[in-house]
Image (cartoon, rainbow, N blue to C red; front, side):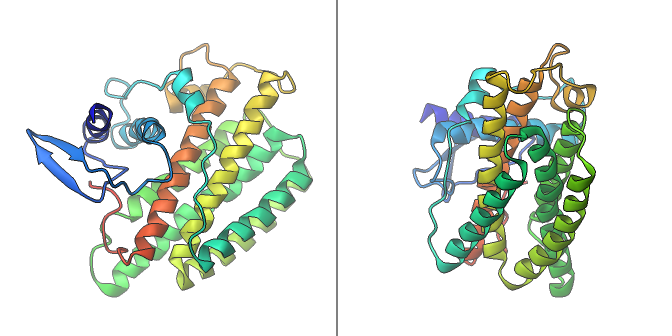
Length: 293
């Protein structure tokens, strides 16, 4: 139970009250929240949940305060490596099966297109990965206006997700310049994805968030491949660029590998958060806050 209490301290203390991983039952005791046995994120280990929550707290602090004085410390390399274990949310409905099949087709196509060009793969991936968050946030925003009621805290985390993915793109662009063909591919893919995901979210938000969850699983695997290529010497482990050092508050001597580890941790966070949002729709809790703000 000690690790669970420390996680609450991480979430409610370092994050300024943000609870990324709410449990189904909370019991208040002596000012601390003790999380019950049943967890909303029961497809990942408690250790991974704690590390991912720490990664989230770093971004939340930067977004809300932007101060180096209060910014939580970076996860150690050991902790970031631990987040590398693959996680898969097992499909539980027809919609989930559709979602995972769509992602498998997209992932196979991406691998055929980029093959061993992991850096180019990462750049193109981030141009598409930044779409769902902003589209979903727009849908939730318009839904709140139509229904003339609160959104209960969905919009801001989704916008933050989109912004985080956009920063991934700007960071990776310092290490890789996409070709003309790749830029044309991005323009077409982005247009189709905005249209397709928008229609999907309007008809089945549960499936839409599940698709993103599985896409982030694929992104996590892609960055793991990237790390392996760096470790094998296939990609030079160059110095991290200023934008990455500033965004992640890394030491001045940070390397590309340190940056990729941080990005992969972000993808793990988005993966589990979107699976959680899909579960809320599945359980009819779309008007329940996904995080206690």
